[in-house]
Image 1 (cartoon, rainbow, N blue to C red):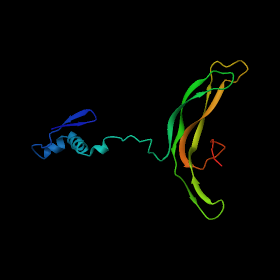
Image 2: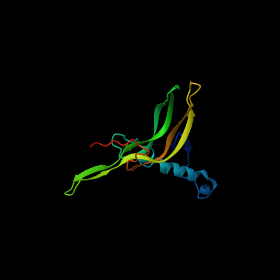
Image 3: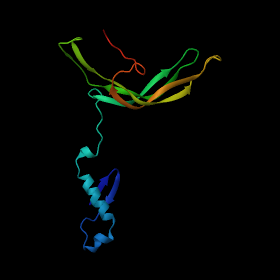
Image 4: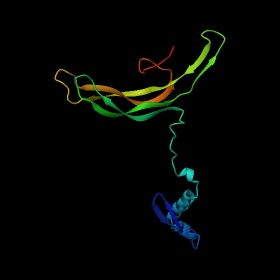
Length: 153
């Protein structure tokens, strides 16, 4: 019997001629394990892709932007940033302000700062550019100290 798992092939004698053969064949346990794995549903073998259009939550995701400042050339930087959708709701109430709201945004929970040198800076311009790298993101209240919060009146 041939079993295939993760592009490796194991050849097993499932039915040895005597009970002592089980002891003499340490690879038999591996063969049984590979057989068991190969008979499992396909859902255990593959990772499903996340549908970003339906994703509710907040996650770290790779992001590329152009870092620039006056007097220097630009530099394309790929970093980790927060991305996602958080549950938000509003409902009318009888007391002022006549609305109860629960508004959360996908925001940084933990970051580290990275500093790079921008190219082609004039002599009197500091070439350093510092930006945050997201380590952990969560749905939370929009803090104007770290996030551009947009609200309509």
